[in-house]
Length: 186
Image (cartoon, rainbow, N blue to C red; front, side, top):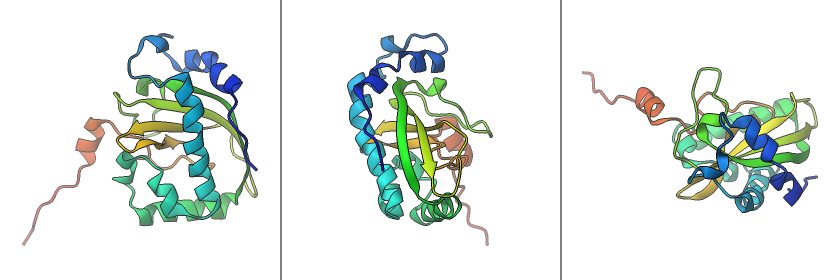
C-alpha cells in the first residue's frame, strides 16, 4: 500500500524548510525547487520505492542519481537492496509527512562527514514507513536531486538504512579525494 503526497503536506512544509535552513532564507535561493516540484517529484520517489518492492533493483538503480551510480555499480546496488529486503522485508506502507525544497548545506551529512554537493536542486521528504520485519527509527527521510536525467533519488535513510557513506551526491572535494588512481606497476 502506498499513499499520495497531498498539496497540504507539500505546502505545509514551511516549518520543515525553516527547521532545515540555517537562516530561513529558502525562497530567495535561485536553485531551489518549487512547491509544484515537491508534488510532481513525489511520483519519481514512488516509482523508486515501487521498483524496490517489485525486486527490480536494476530499475531502481536507474532511478538513482548518476552521481551516486558512479560510486555504486549495479552489482553493488543489487547486493545492498537484497540485504535490505532480507533484513527489513517488504515496504508494507509509506506516507510522506512533509516535503520541501532544501539546500545542500541544510541536509544532514553522513557519519563520516560526506555532505551533499552544493549547486544541486534538492527536495527532502520526511516519511513514515512500515516494513514486514523491521521497525525503523522514525521518521525516515529521502532526498531527491535534479540532474541532467531529471529528478532522481539522491540519498537518505529510506528503506530502513543509510545507503552507505557515498550514497550522497558527494562534493567535488570528496570526489577528488576518492577518485581511483590509475597507476601501472610492473
